[in-house]
Length: 220
Image (cartoon, rainbow, N blue to C red; front, side, top):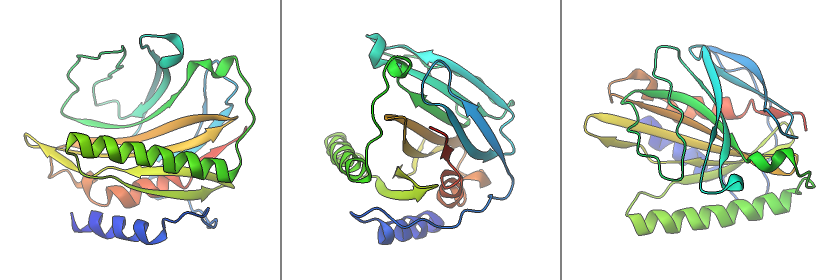
């Protein structure tokens, strides 16, 4: 927990209203670079580092009550864990106690439209609006407030939301979401870890995930 508090404190010091300055990015240890072609869209190619233990990938459509409300999803995870493809406006399936994955989600309507790419000021404004609504939702539900920041990665602004770790019934959950604009559309990249609190992967989860986020590169 002390590592998480330290990491969040550092992020808060650097989070600001103006776009951050770029930094030199190095390949994180125990990772490999993967090129992901997002299917049936104009979004193009997404390149990023993933943990070496992620040896399984799959995609599916997460349907909702309307076509444009759903998401196309692409997930990476270890082959030893159960494959879960959540879908539906109301999803009743109970997720496994062990989750270790990265999930990319984007709108299915990207195959039809080609909007212009927003400028940095627009991205910053959207980030502020999203965080304001998220904090209001957390307040209403009695949840701990997440920490947010923005990174300039490969000449592209990426919004990052770090959720406070939760522990229920002997299972700890860590989650970080990154939002990147691709060809005028937003795509979310969610880093999830759910396992026993003694799992060493929980140590430095924030630091390791932030290193992975800093490798994100798009070709749109």
